[in-house]
Image 1: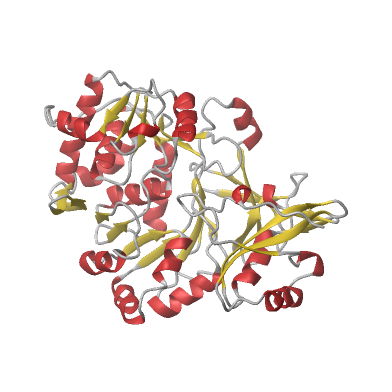
Image 2: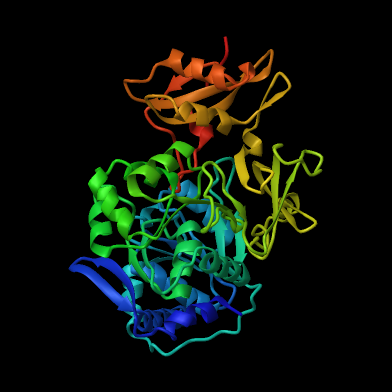
Length: 491
């Protein structure tokens, strides 16, 4: 089965139903599933007329807009491999992806086109949409195997150069079926989409769940706290996917407004970065909803999720999704006991086929069909899994292991601390020392924060310095880029 077969539950099965609302220059426009099908058929024929065939790559360097969806569906139908590019990337980063993926072209707009490296075929998205209107809207079907690549998604590149994870039709299909079953997504839902479509969170979760379930989607170009209240009020969504930074901004809304939003909502989901426990509690108190936190990766889509029914445990990402196996292993690849921290390994139909043209990286990441996530975690005696940061971010001080997230959680509970990031700084005597980077307001008191750490943590875990920064560098999906923080040296 290919992805089109799943999407046809809506494209054909609910052809006359309202599918999508989106912003246009003259106001908010809407399309039915049948109209979406026809639009993407025209684009598919246009791509074929330009020489694209099954297995060719096509880069999407686009903000959220309806043409992104047209192009995505057209690519899925023709076997063209989608290569989404983060719209925040600039020429050096785009050049790496273009050189690595070797696409037939990069589809972009006038604002982003200057960042595409010279010599690369560039197709303007508006000109492409106009050209598609001259093509027949009849269905295009290509013989595609479930193990064929549907997308190459480049990792965030928080350290080193990004690698392209090859996600197949089967990967996306398994993930989509899990989301609909586990999170009870149906045609009755109304999904407000604010996450970027160039990321698997917005595309592989949001768009795929929408197309498979046949619910209605309101597409926004981005999350804007100033526009958010009006969007929630006018569209009245029941389903919302966000990242922790979005939920932190939503907490700024007045209590009455938050209550009205919460009354209509069915499910808030958070991912792509750890959700601080205090944010979950504050959101529950203000909106009347417990955010469902889950854990996925570009390479694996969804791995673990808190239950829809049952306890959504603060700080935990819950249980493995159906069909997904999880192991937590030590450095010698031996299982750790419950309550001990180890590296999270996963196996299942959601895990990518490997890294594009990187057999070395693929061999390093996969051992006996198990994928090494690089994330540290521990399992409670009742099965809940809690993440403890990245393996590469582990701080070893005087022979003791320090997990930055444990310290960050204590700091985030302190008055005046808006954001906290803990890193290891080189030290001649102990190897590394924990250092805290904090975004704070005028109520922050360093001595109080240090005392709280001494009360809650072992002495070797107490930050040796509190470095105040105006903001924490993050990727577009909210992941902290620790390598961009200012260095600190012990004296």
